[in-house]
Image (cartoon, rainbow, N blue to C red; front, top):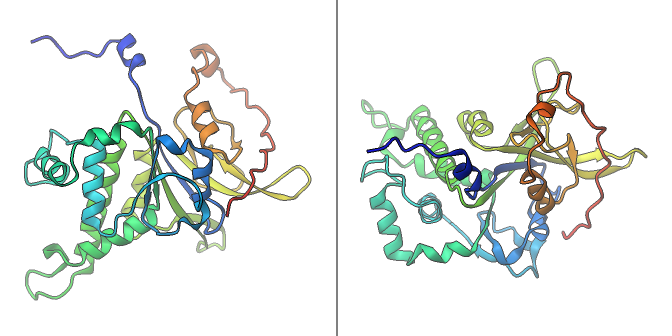
Length: 291
C-alpha cells in the first residue's frame, strides 16, 4: 500500500470551504448578511427564529429546536467521521440513522454556504440538554452537579463545531452575539456570548476566520457598519484572518468578503517581507440596511 500523500497540485485543486464566525452586538445586522449571499446556494440554519430581517428573501431554511436536531443536521451536512465509535455522535451509525429519516444527503449538494444563526442559541440548547444527562448529577448524592454539566457542554459544543469545520466542500459561517464588559482594571473587553468558557476560548482556533461586525467611525467621524478582520486592531475586537488576504477593516458584505478570501495568495516573497507593508484601512462602503 502506497503512502497516501496528497500532491501539491491535487491539494490546490481541491474545493475548500471557508469556516468562520461573525460576532457583533444585538441589532448590528448580522442576520441581514444573508442578503449579501447567493440565496439559491445558501442554507440558513435559523436557531433564533429571528428571521424578520430577511423577510422576503427566498432562501431554504432549517429550524432546529433541540440539541439532538443540531447534531443530526451537522452529521447530515458534514457526513460521518470514520474515526468515531458506532455509539458516538457523528459516527457512521449516526449518519446512517439520520439518512434513514431525512433521505439522501445528496439534497445538500446544491448548497455552497451554510449560515448558522446563532452559535449563542446553539450553546443554550446544548447546555439545556447537558443538564439532563447523567454527567450533570453527582454519583454520590444524585444531586445536580453544575461543574459536570459545564464540562459536558464544552465537549459537546467543541465536537459539534469541529465536525462542521471539517465539511471541506462548503462554506460554514456561525453568527454570535458579542458582549462588552469591563475587566478588573476598568478596561473594555469583548467576549462572545456563549454558555461556558471552553467554547469561547477554543472557537478561534477551530475556524479560519473570526470577524467582528461593529460600528466604526468613518473619516468624518460618523459611525458605519464594518467588518473588523485582523487580530491587531485598535478597538480590541476579537478577530483573526487565517487567509492573510483581508485588510483590517472590510465592507460588511459577506459575499464579497468570501470572494476576496478565495483570491490567489500573494507571492511568498511578498508575504514574508519584514516589516510588512500594511495598506491604509479603507473606509468601508455603507451597506443598505434590510432590517
